[in-house]
View 1: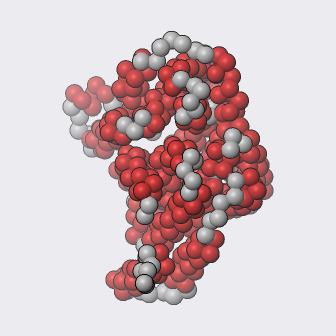
View 2 (view 1 turned 180 degrees about the vertical axis):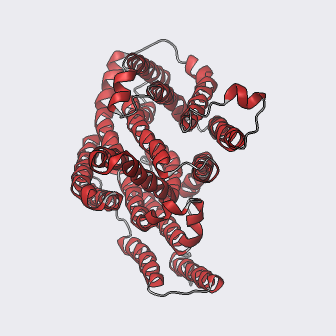
View 3 (view 1 turned 90 degrees about the vertical axis):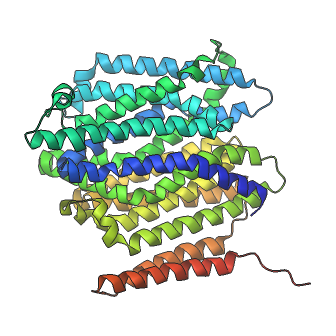
Amino acid sequence: MSNPLKKLAGQTAIYGLTSIVGRLLNWFLVPIYIGTAKFTPDQYGIITEMYSYVAFLVVFLTYGMETAFFRFSTLQEHDNKKVYSTIIYSLFTTSFVFIALAFLFDQSIANWLKYPNNKEFVTWFAMIVGLDAVASIPMAKLRADNRPIKFAVINFANIGVNIGLNLFFLAYCLPMYKAGETNWLIETFYNPEIGVGYVFIANLIASIVKFLLLLPDMLKAKFSVEFALLKKMFIYALPLLVFGLAGIVNETIDRIMLKRMLFESKGELETMTQIGIYGACYKVSIIVTLFIQAFRYAAEPFFFAQEKEKNAKETYSTIMTYFVIICATIFLGVMLYIDIVKYFIPNEAYWEGLKIVPILLFANISLGIYYNQSIWYKLGGKTKYGAYIGVFGALVTILLNYIWIPVYGYVGSAWATLICYSSMCIISFVLGQKHYPIKYNYFKIGIYLGLALLLYFATTQFTIENFYTKHLIHTLIIFAFLGFIYAIERPKKVVI
């Protein structure tokens, strides 16, 4: 592995540690919600739906400025400090306005969300997304300045507070209260009427802690907004905002559409139950997303820095191959052990949704490949193409969900996700080869993904009753798959 690849691997490990561990810990909250707190599928549906809006709003409030920061801070004609301070104050202003509007119209928004008795959800989430939007830039600066330790400490503090408060409210206070036991902690801090709202309160407090930890870095930004520079960054970032919003539509609109399209015909209970099952099983497929997110944290600044090297395209191609190898291995591992993995959701009422897991895993792999390819329009300043592709994907998602949700429910949403991401991947490849051609190793990519899919389907054609025999065979299959990859990828000896 060449030095640039070693550097990327090291950065992925460091930034990925906080990203993957953080997401994993949050991921493991699902058994707490479902097993310990015993949230029913319709209750978990509330959590799933509300965080769908959060994902959309965070992208809206950062409006592509994170990538703009990486781009403009690496250009010699712009002063890094001015770029940083300009973006910080821009995001602070827009986030403050957003939070103020949310407080002003909280009841109207709650009525629209069909939670008329929970207007506090609106104000809590407005503060969460507002604070997280402002915090995104100092966190990006830590990555750009190669300060992974501080990045990790702040992320772990945010994660620790969130996890700790979830455990306190839902794994300590709630069971004690239900058992009829109480103490001053429970009497002071716990109100059973809040219910799933404690998930949101924990997140809000964690966001406040993260913001306060980053405040010293934000205060270093001098009150100096260069409007000409801000205009340039807006022009660069606007297509990324459109793409980002389109991407969030692809990721979350299905849960929102499930409620909007089924609420009247199926009723509140069944609709929220479908959303809850879909959200819980989606969490199983997110294992691939954990790796992709960690990879993106390190890859985006790395790709920009690597652009100047003469062998940059060869490096990008090699990275794509290794990326696919890891994703294919994760897919095979999850699906060959799905009867063990399913206990991550400790309630059989949710297991009917496990049939969507392989669909969503491959959908997320397609999305990861697309993220790798997207470097062509970011490096070339052709971000408008990212917006075009994202909007196309969003239209596909909305159309297919509109057609399939009334017929297939959340299963239709899963297939819509796969078709959307696959089509975006294909379109990006075609355009990328025209504007910034990279010779990816299509043979290896196709073989690794195809073989993983073939091995999985082969195991579904045979029923092995004995648990240990079954998993011994599946383990041997995975080792054979990895051995096959090693035989192809290992460095060839040069014979003189």
